[in-house]
Structures are given as structure tokens and as C-alpha cells.
Image 1 (tube, one colour):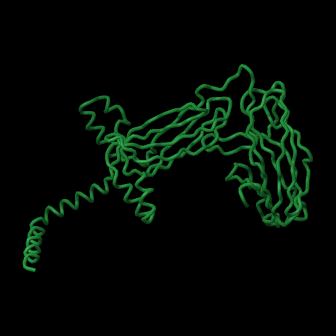
Image 2 (cartoon, one colour):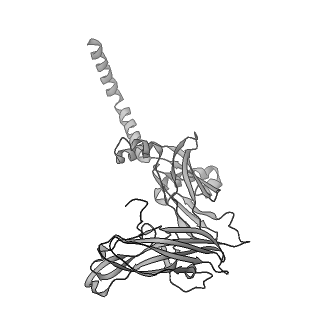
Image 3 (cartoon, helix red, strand yellow):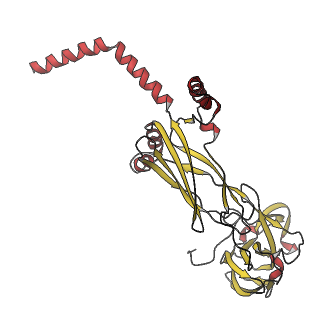
Length: 362
């Protein structure tokens, strides 16, 4: 299906729901699509918005659909969508603002239909973000149920991210807060860090007390923990990148983009960042990925700085962390090689002289 046609929505793409219905024998025939998948708008109190959504049945079976609204929220950290069926006052719950034309319909195979809706923002609507979803629920006839079998019936929907602007209530100047930006503990060389902290403590009490003074990892292929919080009453979608540079030379090692995800008001969301140096990206073009990973992760030594650069509505937020890269396995291998060469130096020297004399005679 081309990008300009209907877009399928599932739990993995829009956070909606796949409902398990016991014993539906022809569930695999159901293939529903909607377009557009999302409305993101700013409205005022008392404003009326008219719109439409297209829904199509790409399955092999005629499909009765019931169209309804519900509000949703998101889990902390994961951003997983939760449908909120609890009754609230219309000033808080935007699902009551919708009027749907023909909420009951039957779609024949290959048929597409336009569903019109109207949003009426109440005069007492609370300022800030309001979040609802227009659900298209298949109504499965009882004769299609088959005892003892379980199939998946897709419920698709269209997201509505509505911001209600009220005079005198402005957006936060600094809505984005970096709750955590760190390298997970599993990547740290704890014994090396403790050893360096002990040595540093001999010369400075501050170094002994500062557990983060010596952050040491084994290689440059790293995952960073990034948790961001939205302290505004409106949703935000931060963008940005992570850049790693050498503190010795200032040379850039590489950069990676931060995933673009929406953070609802008051929520904290996890943004995992996977970093690989530019060397890996260059080697990956010519070598097997496993070989490129080994080489790129073993060639960086020394102290580096991870620079996080984020932006929301034109306002930037920065944070940095310093760390050391010490590929100890490579270091041990090099030490062993040096020791072997040292012990065999006389034999190597003798063999070199013999080869040199043979070359002169020839």
C-alpha cells in the first residue's frame, strides 16, 4: 500500500489496541485501515472544528463497524497508551466534544467510506492538552464464533491531540526536564573505577567522594539511558542528537539522533539512545557487521565527552557527561604480545640476520 493511501494502525505503530476475542473463526480476514492516523491541532474555547476520516475494509468479508470516542493517557517511561473509559466532566474529557455522523456502518470488501465528525470545544474547557481516540470496532456476528478457538480482531483508531489555548495561560518557558542522562551500570568497569577512585582519593578527598569522577567503559558501542519529563500542560515532542567528542583533541567520534516521541503533560518518558562511532558506520559498508563492530569498539582509548543537545519549540537544552574508554581485553592481548616478542627477541633477531644474509647472497 502506498504512503498516500490508508495507513494501518496497530499497537506497535500508534499505541492502539489488538483485542483478543475468543473463537472468531474468520478474524484473519479482517483488514481495516484509516486515514489520516492522527489529528494534532490547537483550538480555543467555543471553537468548532469539522473534519473527516476515511476508513477502508481491505479484507475478504463484509464488516460491521461501530465508531466511538474514548480518551487516553500514557504510561510513565514507556509511553504505552491506556484507554480511559472513566466518566469525567466535559471540561476535562475531550471525548464529549465529538459528534460523529453515522457511527454504525457496514463496509463491504474493498469499500472505503468517509466518516464526518465535529468537535465543539466547551466554553469552560480546561487549558492544556486533551487526548482522545476515534475507535473503529468490528461488530462480529455470533454465527462467526467458533468454540475453542481464539483469534485477533484489530481495533483501529485515529488519535486526536488537542491543545486548548486560553487567553492568559501560556506555555511553559522550560517544559523539558532531563531526569536522567547516563551510561547504564552494566557497561561500567566497576573494578577499574573503584581502583582509580582509590588512587585519586590519596591526593584528593573530593575525588574519593565523587563516585562519578571516574566513569570507565570497555568500548564505544554504547547505550545511553535518557529519561525526559514534560512539565507543561501541553504535550511536547523534543528533537535532538547525541554527539561524542574526544576531550583531548576535540575531534568528533560520532553522533546519533534522539528518537522523536511525544511526551504528554506531566509524564516522564524513556528515550533509549544507541550510539555507534562513525568508524563503525564506515567499516560496515565494506566488512561484515560483526567484524566492523569488533574493530570500531576496540580502537577508541582515552577520555571522551557525550554531549546531549535537545530542542523543544525553538528552546534548547544541553547536558554532558565525561567518561573513559578502556578496552581491557585488547590491552591484555597487546601486553601478552609484547611479552612474547620480548622473550623471543634473540630468536627473532637471529632469524632476521639469517634472512638478511640469504637475501644478500641471492
